Image (tube, rainbow, N blue to C red; front, top):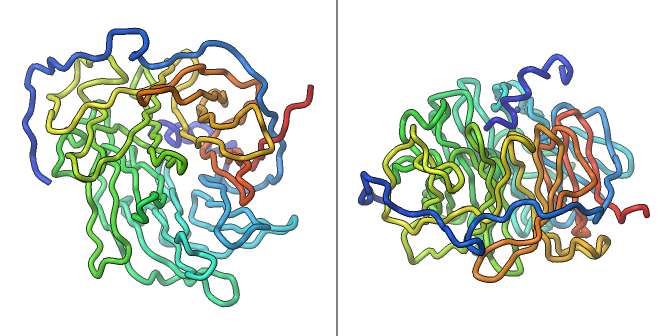
Length: 384
């Protein structure tokens, strides 16, 4: 992912199934009608402002709430710490820095709390081990509020061929399964052709049943370059995936998962957005092709940070809209989900968050933002 790769030049300032049939000619046609093309920016808006609620954190990669802990925000720091913010105080509840490799796109990348975390004190972390390889494991919060540093069990150990495109997001879906986004293994234009290889776990969105005796990872989506951030819309059960682009296009995808059907294909590395790549690879046509619902070019940024569909109550103008942004430019956009799984009314928001790494929500459903500069922000009603 370019998002945290671009932390490299600012580190001194900061101190991130089976093999299917292949269409060798890639004659799948991208959408041509305007209503089926990806939505692009149509205007500006000031739906919300952002206020800074914390500073001095070390390259935060996540901010959000834990079920059953309404008065706190939980933050991941890329070097390997989990921090709880409450009442103006902060506490390091877990320090994995000796077990985490910190690099441009390596580090502590994702967290998911058990849906019943208020009573079942398990949580799940995704990080890069000292060799730079992917690890996902289950941890438990002790009686003193700190996380036991010894994981209860390891759920995934996966070698990474390169230092970039490690993905990041962990999240529970409406089906109770744990979902993970992984990049294509790194390098330019997916040199190992992982994204279109359904036998590889790289370049995928995966899921697992954490209650199984031996949890196994299932491919849910393939054809991804680096799904740094994704989220579920609980109202519709849809998955929104922001996939970081190569040289030209950043994209947002809206997907209805259908477990009884083959995994759906988001097109990389045959396509970037809806553009076929000269350097691209053959397209596996086993699963339905899903085209992005929104895109922007590198004139407006260079690394998309996916967000959430807002169902809070404090910012009325955002009701039911999907909010996302860009790490490089700090730009924030919102869009309206449209019929037939599409998107419309893309607005460039006046508010900005520099070096945006994550968009989450607090216990009241209000938007929160993490910045690699070390700050945490919250969305508030705009000042007119």
